[in-house]
Every structure is written in C-alpha cells, then in structure tokens.
Amino acid sequence: MSRIGRKPVNLPKDAKVEIKGSFISVEGPKGKLARTFSDRIGMEVKDNQIFVTRAGDTKLDKGQQGLVRALVGNMLKGVTEGYVKELEINGVGFKALVQGNILTMNLGFSHPVIFNVPEGIKIEVPKPTQIVIRGIDKEKVGELAAEIRSVYPPEPYKGKGVRYLGEYVKKKVGKAQATGGK
Image 1 (tube, one colour):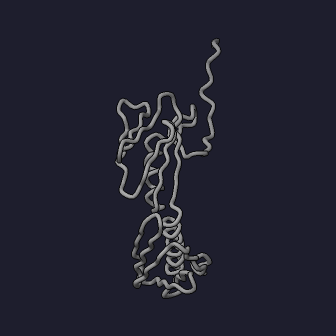
Image 2 (image 1 turned 60 degrees about the vertical axis):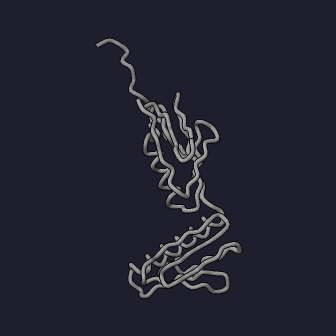
Image 3 (image 1 turned 180 degrees about the vertical axis):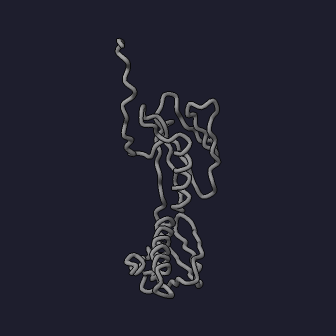
C-alpha cells in the first residue's frame, strides 16, 4: 500500500486549486503552477484537503499515487512559501556575479562560466562567494543548483569548488613526500 499516497494534502488558506481530471492548477501569493498527471490517478478537494486516488492496485498505480501526492504537496508549498537553495564557492579568486538574468562565475578556468537564469527563478549573490537561488518550482530550483554545482564540484584535497551551503566534503590526505634515500 502507498502510505504517502493515502495521506491527504492540506490546502493552505491563501492557495487556490483547480482540478480538471488529471490536470491540476495551483495559485498562491508567490505565483501559479500547473501540471498534468497520469489518467490513472484522480484528485479531489474535500474539507480544505486534497485527496489523491488511484484506479487500481497495481504496483505502478500505487507508486504513481505516492508520487502525485508528493508533487501536489510540493506545488502547494512552492506557491505559498517558495523554495531556496544556497551555494557557496570556495577557492582563491573564485567568485560569482549576477547582472540581470545572467550569472557569471570565475572558477579558475581560462574563461568565465556563464549561466542564463530560467524564467521563474531568481538568483541573488549577497557575497561574491555565495549564491542564493529562489523560485516556486522545486524541480527547477534544485536542477539549476545542481547544474551550477556540477561546473566545479568540491574536490577532496583542497576543498575548492562549488558546494551546497553546509555540505560537508571529506578531505583526503595528499601524496606523501619522499624523504630521500634509496
């Protein structure tokens, strides 16, 4: 049984939901999100809660029910509170800068790394070594943070690179120096 799928999603006071078959539209103070799911999954609103139902008891239907319930919960949280991912840059001379919809990072390469910020995402650089990504879509915020991190992931010897705020990188001991003699 899908334990997550059976739980209802509480509807926040300042969010509006519109359901048409397998299509759901969610609107809140931060913005609007819409998504279409499988026809085998149904949704209905009762008593300020959204219930997700499934067509059958197959393993796929049970998994889809839990997935849809989690995605609907993420949509509601996004339009009411929003999502934030913070990255930090470690390394001598490594820095970031935002100009309009373009994020420019100097990460020790021979060229600056440039990212175009997708629509619906807002990037701030409070310090040259810190990047804050905000948005209402959890997938887009997480994907952009992962793409930025993948340009120069933290390396284990000196700890240089782009990492999530608070991410622990286990350091390795470098190669030992020869002390002479044969």
